[in-house]
Amino acid sequence: MDGGARADELERRLAAGAATEACDAFQGLVRRTPLLSSGTLEQRCGGRILLKAENLQRTGSFKLRGALVKLASLNDPPGVVAGSAGNHAQSLAYAAHARGVACEVFMPSEAPVSKVAAVGGYGGKVVLGGAGVEECLQAALERSRETGFAFVHPFDDEQVIIGQATIGLELLDDIDDLAMVIVPLGGGGLASGIGGVVKLARPNVRVVAVQAEAVAPFPASLAQGTPVAVGGASTIADGIAVKRPGVLTLPLVERWVDEVCLVREDDVAEAMVLLMERAKLVVEGAGAVGVAALLAGTVLPAQSGTTVVVLSGGNVDAGLLALVAQRHEAAVGRRLRVATLVSDRPGGLAALLTCVAQAGGNLLSVEHVRDAVDLHVRQTGVELTLETRGAEHAEAILSALREDGYHLRRLGGG
Image 1 (tube, rainbow, N blue to C red):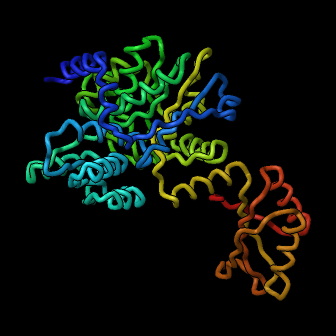
Image 2 (cartoon, rainbow, N blue to C red):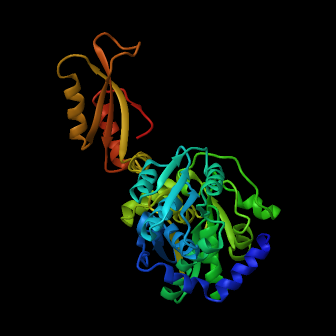
Image 3 (cartoon, helix red, strand yellow):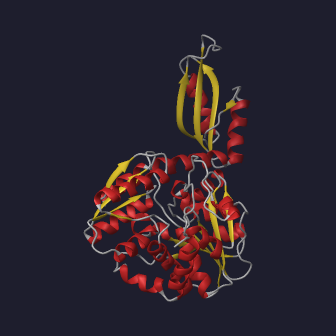
């Protein structure tokens, strides 16, 4: 069947209760994730907003749902194999281990270290290589033909989509006044599953799907009516960096998603920090794009009723999370880097640091720079990284240093 015919068949199955039946495949392995309120988001964006915290799901993402449903549909395969950027790989490895099935996954060479380690921790065999998900999918298909392992597509598969649709069932059960659902959009499996269940039950609910601007094939694909590939680009939302929509998911997104919008990298980073600081939630870039769309004003919440933002995953490397937090601290003035000159005599640096302390700055690091060609023989360069209480406090520290005679150069990077 072509994509349109497959889409019709999947709609028939969802209408007949396939998502409800799929819950039998979970057998206690899938958590019913909470809906969390966010006063900060509501104050900044307006409306009633809830967060569907799939980042708290086992394996750290929604992908476990589809993996378990797909495995339950297979007839005792010798093993399963997949290509994935990370979350599908982790979930399939977890599901295969729970079912006693061998699992191999092909992941991009630049896949996050934490995701690669997690797959191994769940008992899956990882093969690294390829520039992106497309190459990994092709490698997995070849491996499937060689070994007889069942190939499990991360999104363009009926059973996988039905598994993701169970999130939509939970939303319908938990929220009587559901008005809008904002969903991350990579290959389209999550948006198709949630959109199908929600739209079939309550057609007036608005479904909005969000892609990272750096890798966004859906706008052109929807416009042309066929999957169109885009070039690869680095993005903080690596979990949805899919270059081409699925043959099945494209018509489903066209059918059930009211709007596809794009968000910038900086907005995604800001959303990750807000969720960490205000909601105490660790959310990866792909999982935070819905919140990014709200913060940027790209999507407006429903004027009446409840808007739900699906936080699709929380698998992010600690190093990346720290970098995102540092950049945010610098942007809002809570992290200050400056360069200046001090006397290269005993007490020169101490005098500078005393001034910083009296102004209330907290020293994070100090570095001597002695190899600059324009330094006087009795001078040394110093670069300071300071923690402040905010932009006004940072300016007060700079003013105090200037009043003490220091010539300052503000550095970027926080």
